Length: 374
Ligand SMILES: Cc1ncc(COP(=O)(O)O)c(C=O)c1O
Image (cartoon, rainbow, N blue to C red; front, side, top):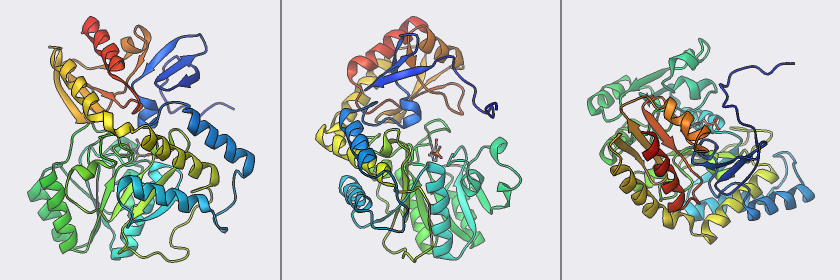
């Protein structure tokens, strides 16, 4: 059987990894400034993380969600503590798209409405409603198009007011910093305007923190740089450091009912151990504390390179915008300088989503390479 060929591949086969380094089967060592698409938070194969997974595999790998799983309660507690959102409730699932799908569904249950308002260049995953609220025509099938969705540009205050005239908006979904779209950030004033209208019209504010959360911007969630209280927050990627783990943080005003949501694998024992150990390592190593300095160092080095038009993003969710398209730069960084970086829908933007454990010398390694290249 052949693989269903949907991924354009780089000709590299990783064999093992440690912290910010990935090694391939030919013995090459790569600096990972992409984190497997913002997934690696505490560094590849962190010993505490690996020990936690091995321990759990020896004990109990899986049982269904029909029994008591104390690890889910421990994880919810740890996530509440680290994010300072103890008042929220947690629903666990397996992937980002699934978290978004469940958040949209909850918003619809809660408001008894159907329409979702989302934003140009937004990306929220590939399941039915998640892809319908994303802004990428080529990946939205006719089936997905059945959802009622309105899309407006970020910062379009007038468009926002007009959209709410339809009276059927169950939810507004927004990435505080757009990932796939190319690192445009929502302003505090716009986000507050969205919240005011959500309250006025009985709609839910969903903040998608799948890429921007887990401490990547310095605060645990990127929306916490602003002054809003989301009804639903979606998490995935970094919270499992490579183990599939995702969830929805649900405001206490939204009440649970047996059977309302469900999943076979979500919140399984190994996944919870992965999540707990990520939080423990983040706290023990005070990982978030170094992020503002790293961001500043990155921006200082970027400012010295004339080929860079603009630096985008926040914390360790950063982008370098060039006049030229970045596909050649990206390939050269990978094959000639052994550095993994990312692209985005903006073909001129090099996207950096490194493990949160990187240090200044790793940032220097990137800019030393870019100085030679551009
Ligand atoms: C903001 C955002 N939401 C949702 C998703 C979908 O997550 P997953 O690929 O785990 O389904 C992504 C993935 O890139 C994302 O960046």
